[in-house]
Image (tube, rainbow, N blue to C red; front, side, top):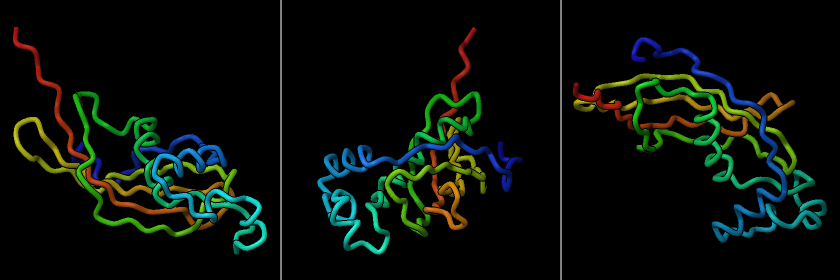
Length: 150
């Protein structure tokens, strides 16, 4: 996969970010700010005229959509989040909007026997909008499946 540096690894399907998902995230994290969970007030007072997804909700969806793309090598036994080099929340995701993930591998380096650190550029696109919801550079630690001894 090192040779794939700079290449797009894939694009996910579109996922709707509905109010139910936003409310569930608010319940899970305790972040019940009205801009996310109060559609009536948001219609009146928000510059977006609707509720918007939490930025961290949008960021958290990267993991599942990345798995859908199948961007990991076939011989990967396990993959773990290692960190983020940068995250920018570019545009709000309005309740009911559809988003998808576009992943490009930036680089991969050896980190020991059977261990590799991969850096990827992730762009969460909003259907029908020119600007993305977010851009993030993620680091993922990959562990190679061990070959069985004969």
